[in-house]
Image 1 (spheres, rainbow, N blue to C red):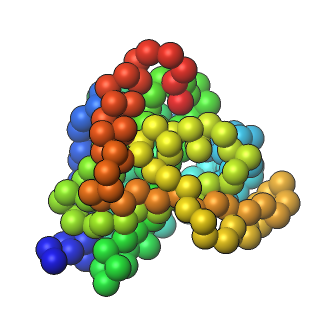
Image 2 (cartoon, rainbow, N blue to C red):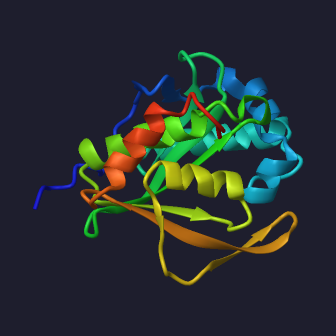
Image 3 (cartoon, rainbow, N blue to C red):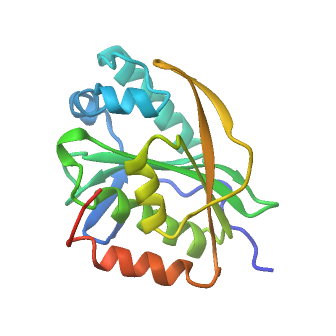
Length: 205
């Protein structure tokens, strides 16, 4: 079995491909971060504070930096060219013994339906399975979040039969389904590559 090289997680990190650049957050992103995350749909589907103001933004960037410096997570801004943040993609909860980790993603309201979430999740999935040598990646998604489940499917993730996970949010209690990407699973990589290649056509997420 190949040794997992995921602890501590690499920092700093920039990933480029699929038409996006994933880069580290910086303090210079504060104003853009607040605009990005102070949005009803993000508050509905994620545990973000709402309203998301400057104080929340400062705390968010501080936690992100701490998580990166300690090697506990990968937390990168989604950009088109390394500049303006358009969303975010994360990898955290690494279990070296099981060779698995959890991922998450979001895209700001003005930048949706451009294929950014699919591009970013696919890029980080490749990195996790290739460079970090993880074999099972997890997503936790509210079943009512149809846009997010569509991204998961297009990136080769499959819904598991695991029990729903309860979660408290600003709009009341919800539950999260578990999706998985298993490295080497027949059809998973082929389906993901096909969808990334065609993301400029049809409906985008």
